[in-house]
Length: 199
Image 1 (cartoon, rainbow, N blue to C red):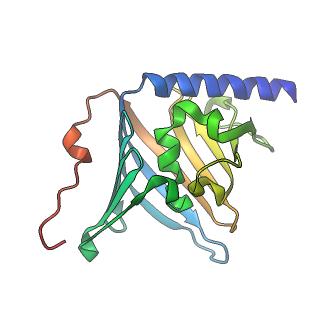
Image 2: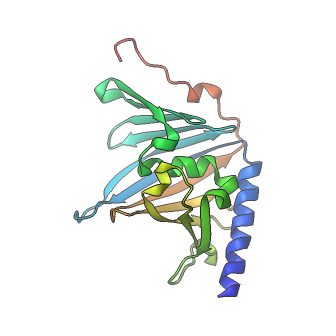
């Protein structure tokens, strides 16, 4: 349907323009993961902070504390309970970390994905088209385990409201972002991992 495609292109344009203008961003998030074969979703929540270029912090506050620090491609995952820091590369992270890549690169979605209208009613809050992102073959490992991603944006501001990741395994993770605040001058110190010597 040509009209739907036109609307989708319009949403992408607004979304990318919004993230290009965004120097820093913070929001609350709730994550629900439906694991193939389990009835009840696993729910967690926390805060996310983004600062250009390429810095991101994803802080799970409940049910357990865990902090993910991203500096371009370098990732540190700090689990206070285990007194451990795991160090890796964003491009090799599991697909559960795909939203990190997405939030970092929301200004260049069409490089990594084919973007299509979402089947079914296909509209989110305020009647705005939902975007279905199909990973391109040349994508990083973290998006290769995904079948598709469905994005919903907030009306007017075009910040991302929900991201649903449909994995090839059948698992579905949905992240809902609330209270987004842009360009408030997020402090650099938030992105520096400080741990005690016994970690």
